[in-house]
Image (cartoon, rainbow over all chains, first blue to last red; front, side, top):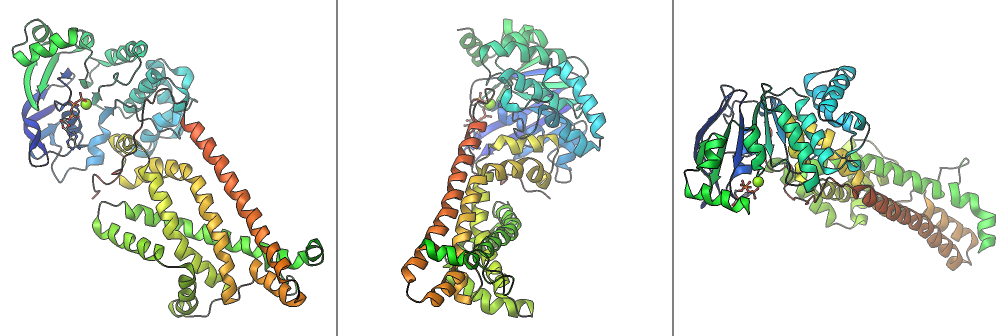
Length: 242
Length: 248
Ligand SMILES: Nc1ncnc2c1ncn2[C@@H]1O[C@H](COP(=O)(O)OP(=O)(O)OP(=O)(O)O)[C@@H](O)[C@H]1O
Ligand SMILES: [Mg+2]
């Protein structure tokens, strides 16, 4: 579903943030991407929907080479949900409008149809009573669940998460992870940057470990957590446990 | 002074209307409103052009803004007086000459206000819209501009105050407005210039001060509505919003 082939990216002439990334995510799979701060996780996940350009290599999504000049990037992005660390809800719109905006304007859905769908999604993320609220009236955990619903409103076959819980107060992490877990293995292909190793253990099919732009491990969670091959991954896990 | 106002308030308010052209305070406000209403869309276009990732769009817009901001309004007014009739190929009334000069001049300032409003938005707003699949212009229209314009409302009112003050220069090309009415009154009364021009100044001050205060009040309201967003830990202003990826 998503294939990286020798992807390289530099910031300026000397800073290489992605180093020969070659890996694949299969359809319906859940991949957790972890690694130390500054290792390039955000950059990597943002290259998939072209929020970040790459310098060489190819990324193929659903058979389409995403960084090819001929690709209609807006079309491509409709099918790739993206959930941000900072939620990025539109503060001037109600929860309902946040969710229905894209289906109405980009898929030509009628308001009634889009709202019907939004209500189903709000039930799914446990916020059916918040349709009329504005983002400023929501807690962090609620905001992030709305952001997930907003992404799902386009029915993307792929959804990407960049540290969806790291801007949240600890007591709200659980409710968001529960929603993401509920999505896993429903057919949607999922990539999630996170340091929540409990989540990785329970929900991931595979864990990728990135260090200084190099993909050092690509393993099943059991194998990754019990016997990480690379010393850097061992140290990373040891640090997390403290 | 009160006596002058009592005897001449109609002249100060509406000029010689209905026996002559509309003038006075009403004309001043009409000039300012027409100037703002017409300058606003031009300013939005200029602001959007200024942040364009394409240099052939952003450079001319920047040039216009810098040239206008480096010119006294009186020069722009003279230029409009002589050049606008040539450009449009027919004579232009004083009213519309002044409006034209105001639009030329103020759209450059308003554009900078709007540009600042756009660039103060967190970059995540643009990225969220683009990630959903919205193109550059729809992102602007649906997500960026509604927020940027709302947030810059107080600054826009401030610009409206400038416009009101600038209309007084219409006097030099004999536009019937408030200053002109006061000058007429002064030549009728002959012996009370200090009183007449004090009335003029105080009236400008009251109008402008009221607007400035309401802008401050609005600013506080907007600031309050932006706070208390518990979900949002921080939102850093980014300067390069919308300047990252050009649209085909
Ligand atoms: N716009 C940029 N210009 C220059 N360097 C950048 C830019 N964005 C990121 N970097 C650098 O690229 C590297 C990778 O950044 P990235 O944000 O992808 O890391 P990350 O793994 O997501 O880190 P974190 O866990 O802190 O979110 C870092 O060293 C960062 O400083
Ligand atoms: Mg990151």
